[in-house]
Amino acid sequence: MRVPSGPGHRAVLAGATALVLALTASPAAHASSRIPPAHHGSLVLVGGGLKENNTQVYGEIIRRAGGAKARIGVLTAASIPQSQDPDAADPDRCSNSACNGDYYAALFKKHGAADAQWIPVDLDHIANADSDTVVSQVNSMTGFFFGGGDQERYLSTLMHGDAHSDSKVLAAIRHKLSQGAVVSGSSAGAQIASGPDMVSGGDSYQALRDGSAPGYFDDPTRLGYFPAGGFSFLRSGLIDTHTGTYGREGRALRLAADTGHDRVYALDENTALVVDHPGTTRETLTVLGPGGVGVLDLRTARTRTTQAGWSLSRARYTYLSDGDRYDARRWLPLPAHDKHLLIPSTDSPVPANTDVFYSVANPEGTPYSFRTTARALASTRAQYTATASTFETGPRFTVTFTKRPGFTAWSSDGTSAQTLAGMQIAVAPQ
Image 1 (cartoon, rainbow, N blue to C red):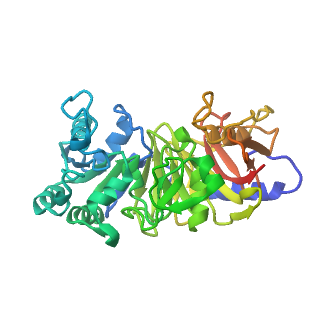
Image 2 (cartoon, one colour):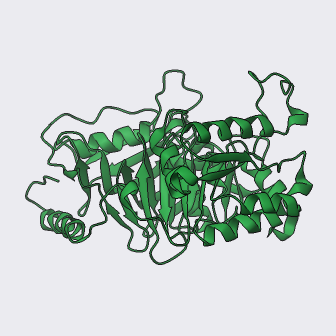
Image 3 (spheres, helix red, strand yellow):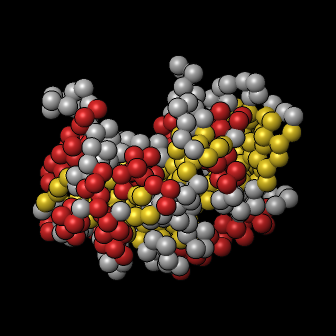
């Protein structure tokens, strides 16, 4: 990143130089398809909205499941069951667990899997979660895919109540993962991979204004979470999905701060976060797809609540795009080999942003608003700080983005910032 002389100049250069040396010394900055299959399984977590033609993500799941020999078990218990779907009899309109299971099974076969089958566990078939016959079906699979819907239904069907213990089917999937299988999912199917304090719902503005609470709420704007979490396949950070599309960075920051977590993986739609060696000291993550994954770092963050409202300072935002990797243990982003440090060449100011979390109340809002401001700031040499605000008032929250010493941006075209590392974030009521 290009910096002028003055306070912090040497610190910025030192941070950028250290990151360059780390990347130069490491062979890790390569696309996921070049990584040998993990010896004890891997995760492919999609932020929702997985398109039928996303050969990159479907292909990665199938490759990790054995390529032409892949057998994918599809779980769709997050969908409503057939008994609750008024269009269950119409194959062109149905949207229930069985119908969705068939849909994904057909897609995996289309993309090259040898076989793909629905695992028949849902709210109509809860007993199947402890069926030895279904466990045998699970054991014959080399990979698994969890579809979207409501992650609470996965808890209701695949775990045992307040004990939060595994059903036989979930225990079998967990064992397969430990032995080398790939576990993938989209939207709720990615969210359920979370450990403690898995989000259950909520919008960013209401989250910043009102805070979080344990539970599952009928009000979809209220920030809720499950303290016991999901299936805990990934525990190095909280997970959020549909991030840019629904402007969920605000709720992710508030939930992490409220529950004492220092990292959130904020997944964009139609894009996968691939996790090798999950839960180990070698845990490494790779981004695949047209969007990206935000990493919200709260290690040095501070929060405060006054009469004016809740505020947060000193959080950091890293944004990874296609081909980038991330060393979870070292908190180190590893941009793809075709990206280089960005030297900003424009003096254009950062455009005004009065809807930083893409409010549903704003008919003229645009998705990916938070990311847009961050990238615009990274791409200009005219500013080191930019602000954006919420559409809602009472209070209106302002987000401040700052390029502090150590911040770096990366680009494949030399002009626009695609990957960001360590931009400082503050949120305050006005």
